[in-house]
Image (cartoon, rainbow, N blue to C red; front, top):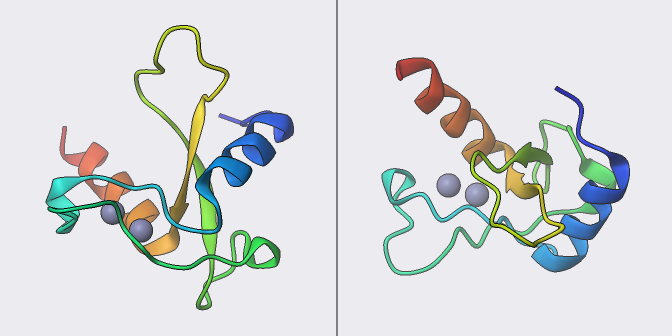
Length: 84
Ligand SMILES: [Zn+2]
Ligand SMILES: [Zn+2]
């Protein structure tokens, strides 16, 4: 499922160069994941690598349909869903 590029860019601006993941199952108990991300490393398996991911249940009235995740969280989130 492709995410519109404009949504990715908007989400990236909102994320401010940090992973947006808040999944408690990843150990983000007190705040969101604070992994620093580098825009040029999108999809790269290096430090600063990240990927956009659809928010499963988008909030009503927001343009944000995806969140920015570091690859660690991205892969963990994907694994989570396989178990459901
Ligand atoms: Zn993360
Ligand atoms: Zn996470």
